[in-house]
Each structure stands twice: as C-alpha cells, then as structure tokens.
Image (cartoon, rainbow, N blue to C red; front, side):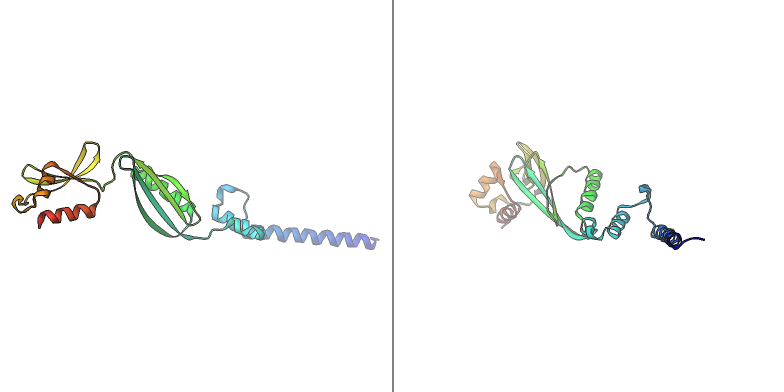
Length: 197
C-alpha cells in the first residue's frame, strides 16, 4: 500500500506536469519563437515588454514629430543656409534610415551634425558661394544677372533686354557698366526695381 507521502508526491508531480504543459501551450499560443529570423523588431519589442514589464521603457515604439534640419555651409562666403521640415508620427531611427536612403538615391552627402530627442540636423560643406551672391553687369546691350559660383565663376541667372540707359541715374549706370556685386535676393530685387523706374 502506498503511504500518504507517496500520494502527495504523486499528486504534486501530476500538478507540475499539468502546469508545464499549460505554460508550454501558452507560449505557443503567444507565438513566442526562439528562431530570431522570423521575429521583427516590433514583435521582439512587444514580447520583451510582455515578459519584462518593468523594462517597458527601453522597448518603447512611441512615435513623435521629428524636425529635420538641413544646413549648407559655403566655404567661400562662409555663410550657412538652413532649411527645415517636420516628419509627423515617426522615430529618430526611422528618419535616419529614410534620410540615408533618400541621400543615396539623390546623390546627396549630408552628415549628421546633431541629434536631440525630437530633431536631427544634417550638415554638408559646399566649396563655393551660397546662391545669394550675384553680379549685375550691362553687356552686349542688355543687363545680365549672374549667380556667383566661386572666384571668377558665374552662371547666368537672367537677362533684361528692354533696359533704357537714358532713364537710369548716373551712379547706377556707372555701377552696371563696371559690374556690381549684390549679396542677397531682396537687395537684387530692389536694385533691378531701381534700374527699371
């Protein structure tokens, strides 16, 4: 006859076997898989948070609005041009991945300059002048406006054919005959407006 201790041990072993079976079935139902080739980062994060709730902050997939700043530094004029955009509902890591892909596709070469919790700044150095430097000169019976690309490097921006030199003040006439340099788009617009009035 089996004694009382033997019965208790037998019942205990049956209960343990039942608990292990249920636990194994639970893991299978949750899709817990040791094969990491079939687990996405989000799945892994969710599993990690489920089994380690005290570490939920480290596996956060919270999205934010990320400000992306682009800075172009021009070596000749030593000026910076800054532009920005906001990407809504994303993460810094996602922006870095998207930006890397975009730059490779478009032949751009920005480097990461600064990263904060809600922004990322990309910077590139350009050997030349920024696009805010112009040379205005009267030549070949028209007023030509050039973008200054570098030392003695110009690109024709526009020409004005219908400029009447008789109606231009003498000091402006001297400037355009010699060629004058202008260092901003608003200043260029004012200068051309002065010439045409």
